[in-house]
Length: 191
Image 1 (cartoon, helix red, strand yellow):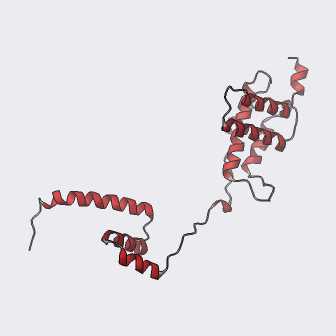
Image 2 (cartoon, rainbow, N blue to C red):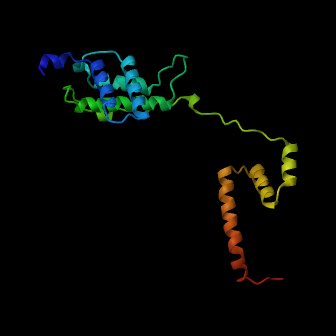
Image 3 (tube, helix red, strand yellow):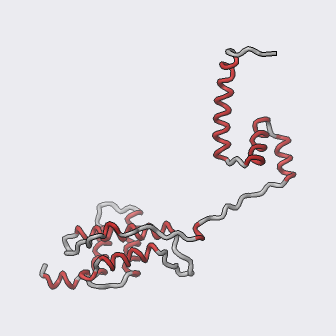
């Protein structure tokens, strides 16, 4: 390929060939379809320019676009998960471009050290909305519960035990009850 052609190849040409390379495999999986659509979106979002201008600063800017969580059409930022998918696809594209024989682009020095952490937003923290049980309902549950369930209700209400804590407690209790018979033989009753 003559040097003048290499200089005029563009980012969008490379992204188009990259999308075709994803589709070129023998079997088409749903993940390949997703990757092709991610690559198509990368083409829409990032401006077209010659690959000779794709230096470290431009790579940083392209990665930073996804790190900063761009806004969706409704004005909400893209989810952290979605930005992670776009960012990973962009990095896969850069790796493909680096090793591609069709393009003479090599990743710039320091490319592997570009920060790829997605920005955390306050709205990422989901509010835990728990169903609140009334005192009358709790009283009814307690009256009809067996002894171990009454113990669990009391521990949950008074000590704030969560479901995982209850599971560990029940496992430990059943182990202790199972061993109690064998331990009881070794102890005398003191009056």
